Every structure is written in structure tokens, then in C-alpha cells.
Image 1: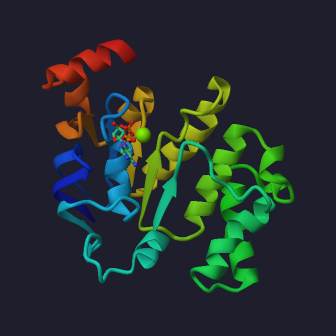
Image 2 (image 1 turned 135 degrees about the vertical axis):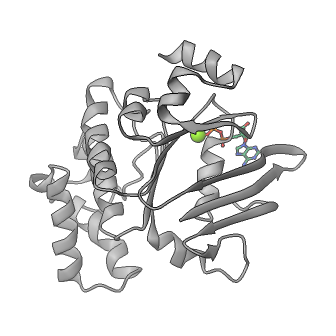
Image 3 (image 1 turned 60 degrees about the vertical axis):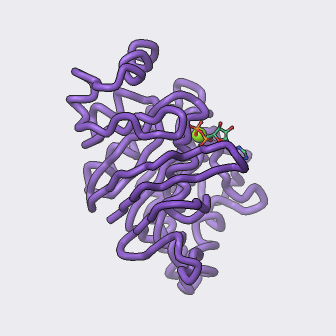
Length: 240
Ligand code: ADP
Ligand code: MG
């Protein structure tokens, strides 16, 4: 469903992605980890066209992301993305956060959008919070709303960029639990995270990045038991 072939990207002379090749099949959960600044965010943002790249190919569900003729807004509507910092609209209620893009981008009626949005809000356990504003929710609750909002768009895949790294420790699990549920239902997911318990539980593969390169892309158990790349071994030793 998602294919990256020899993707390279530069900021001026600085190469931020070097020859990155990987793939994510329908229903796969792939975790991406690696040191800060190694290019993880940049890599997943190439998938929905949020980061342009100079070389290589990114193909999502048959669509060439790098092709200037591709309608990126259409592609983005089909790929859910959840960031570190929630990014809810602060001036809208939870309910309006859930419905806005459904109405504006997908052309659903307000009633349809509300029904769908509230169904997902219920699923993340926050139906009672629908009239609140983001600032009235905890970080963990805001992130669950952000996930519900993405799901309400019926995405073909979900991208997560360190979704729990801005959360207080006691809120991390409530977000990870929602993500585990999604993974178990067969959602196609690329997840940048250092939550290795989560990775071990649901990821089929782990990608390890360093200096803009994919230095390891292994089945999960193999990654944890015999990481091939020296750099991945050192990294794991530090965080586990
Ligand atoms: P990660 O998510 O692994 O921490 P990023 O993908 O955010 O890494 O960034 C990779 C590298 O690209 C970092 O060294 C970062 O400083 C650099 N970088 C990111 N955005 C820009 C930019 N707009 N201009 C120049 N360098 C950037
Ligand atoms: Mg990042």
C-alpha cells in the first residue's frame, strides 16, 4: 500500500534522507525509531506529501506522491496523521473538531459527520467530552480526540509521529491502548515512537534510522533479539 523507493531529500547541502527504501503492506504495523534528528519525521511526512523530496519515489495506494499532477489534498484526506502536539483546533469544541474536515473535505452533511465523529469519540472513551474545548482536556484526552478525528475520515492508513512523547507518563497508556486496538483491527500504520513495549506488542517490523538512512528494517522479534546494525544495538541498550 505504501512504497518508498530510494527516497533522498536535501535541505540545501544537508542531506536529511539518504536512499530510503521500504514498504508497508495493507494491515502492516511498522514502527520507526532512531535518534533525534535521524529523519524519522521527515520520512513519514513524505508519505502524505507534507515533505517534498528530490529523488526517488513514494507510491501510496497506486498514487505517485512526488508527481506534481497528484492532488495532495485528496491524498492527505485518505491518510490520517497524528502528531506529537495534538494539533486540535483550539477555538472549536471537540465535536466541531471531529466534524470540520469531514464536511469541508469529504463533503459529508453535518448530521453524517456528527454521527461518525461521535462514534469514534465513543470508541476512544470520550463521548462525554464532546462539548468541551481542547484546552479543557488533558494531553492524553486531546491526543485521543486527534486519533478519533483522523479515523472519522475513513483513512486507508494512519501515520503517527511520536504521539505520546509530549504526554505525562500516566497518560501514555491510554493513547497506546487506542493504537493497539487499531493495530489489532488491521489498520495499516506507520508509527514513529520509542515506546518499545508497544512496538513489541503490535509491530510486524521495526525500522531503525540514523543520519537519514534506514540502517535496519527487520521483523520485530529479530530486531529485539539480534539487531544487525551496531547503531541499533547501542540505541536499544540505552532505551530499554
Ligand atoms: P527526527 O524526526 O528523527 O528527529 P527530523 O526528520 O525532524 O528528525 O529531522 C531530520 C534532520 O533534518 C534534523 O537534523 C533537522 O535538524 C533537519 N531539518 C528538519 N527540518 C529542517 C528544515 N526545514 N531545514 C533544515 N533542516 C531541517
Ligand atoms: Mg521527529
